[in-house]
Image (cartoon, rainbow, N blue to C red):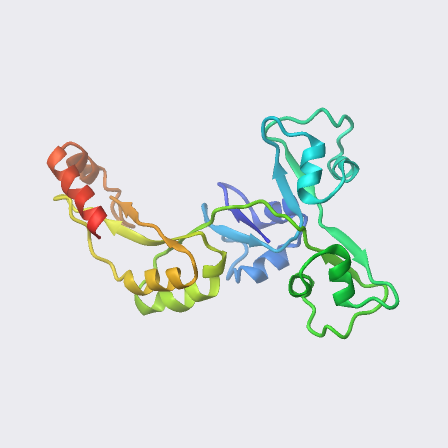
Length: 246
């Protein structure tokens, strides 16, 4: 799976089209109440084993192909690249996961062993409910052996004990968890929030708690507050001390 952060004016159809998956699959996996109402900055799980690699300086197609266990020819064909030397930093390459058509005598275990992937992962990404019911001709998606590492931060504004089941459900996908938010006061103190249950659950899920400190609320932009705090070295020192001890 991939994580996509919604940009201004993006629609679900555009996102689905870019990742070559259906709008229905994105809506279902993210439990979107209204697929037509996306929020800027919203993180969407994209249910695909395909990879979208952004070229960095010094990379070659051969090195990229080696990284993902594919071939230069596969990358060329799927990205309509005529000249393999004509790649540049920032170019996004589509690298499809390998597909395999089940042959007579195949089992899921033998397919997993053939491609050197986890049996559990093979079952999971292909949504297989009964491992004994696979038929010749069925096409399986083979997960990439290596995927790019990404850091994912999740903001949560539902706090207290209500945060626990939410984090238990998605915590394994997070690098960081940010309870939203620690509000700055004019004297440099921080408004207390009920963050203990969220932080404890995040740690149990190996997600690192990260403070989200802000000067604004849903009803106030906080420009005056920022001015008061940033123009006083004494208040700044007090704020930093409170951040460290909180």
